[in-house]
Length: 632
Image 1 (cartoon, rainbow, N blue to C red):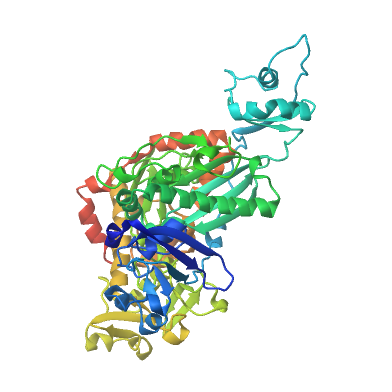
Image 2 (tube, helix red, strand yellow):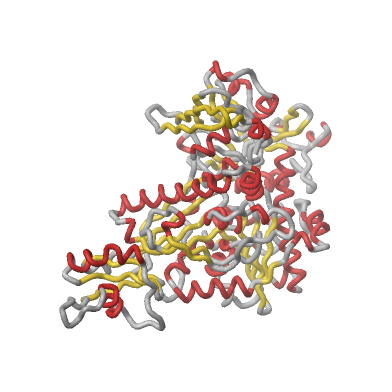
């Protein structure tokens, strides 16, 4: 949160109107205390603005446009991150501009490629045994000889269980009318010993559930048919909490410093989910009340925010979560727009920074069945690693930072239309851009950044320490086509990937020395964590049978580039494979199988968490892992 928020005057309020860049698009209005920043107003309004730094003014991503009368000059932070053409157009940084009177803000179009994550499902071999069951019942008609209550006569027809069904007031309130209108033929919907719904007639063919992957960057929803286990639809959206920061620590700080922060961030993710659920149901012609169970995964902070639980004490050591066990609540309690009595289950957590998403990865990766030594890596704003072997499961998490998501990088962006995703350097630079046929280049995403740095190292543009040429003699060693791409920008070297003529922003798209350093810090933290796990398990690189890369990032990353920059242990590329969106796949498995649901708890409890901040060797391993070329 920026400092300006503390100067807000709660006695005076102002209205902020956000307008999309295209005419006729939706407008958003919100009333906030005078002195709030535009970014804080956007968060309150549910408007999605990028803010990798959480409103500190150090990333330059939260760009919006103001009318000339509202600009009041250019701020130092804007001069640093915006070019003259952008400033002339009215572009400002939302986190540094305070609102003192009613204001209209124009949003800059953001393009995303959500299908890159939703396309990554994998087939899994497990028994289909969902918690949700439907039973068609012919309930006895009451008479003078049978004066049992409606509840008694209904539950008597349900399959025998160890203890009576829990009484549900909301079902009972409508039960007399439902029974009589349906001539006492109804369908009972159960979850264990709980009755979730009573529906008139035979509704066995309508039984659905949701698998939800709440990522720090992207939220993904899968609609599944509980009868046959098939995925019927999928949706993804950028996590709307990004306005509070690109990483979990920024969002925890937002909650800690803002009295309404927890409510805001929970509401944002619930509203995003409801939007996707409504879209899916409309497309498939499904009644949302026929969605009876949702299983969610996310890192520990995202799980807390989803449930509306204060994550404050995850930030300081000893990083204690409020809960670790699997948690099930009613959908109405969260405001999730499925059956009110429907169940929402968050899979168990391992530790403060190893969440239910990692449990989902372990479940999908069938770590309890693997033979030999296997490493599972899920890289995002955090890097979670799981090392399996010798009858043990070791886990750790490291703050990789947002570089892998394209944040914190000068021209970094999510994997979206206009993002450079592949780089090859031979005599000159060759680029592959997402949606290349649809427009100009906007920036570079994580997989493109790894490619670029790996290729720059192989071409001799940077050293193993990640340094660009700083002398004419070093530059002279490069071919002329590459030499001209090494620029001096106010004393700092940068390498041009795309010239301004190719750029949507009208400026050169470059890799800076600072960008390379950010990637080194991120990949160094991941590799150091892996090495600590290997030490704890007592294994060497040659002992590793397989490295499993999870998530969209793991699917699109170039394996050779990852090895070149030293992101992963130096194994043969043939030992590295992608396992898709394993966290989301694990949520699906738990939704569709009570056996897999129970296994999730077993794996979470068996996992041995290694807290890297308490490891005396971690700092040395981290420093050794910064170099691009790794010899062990």
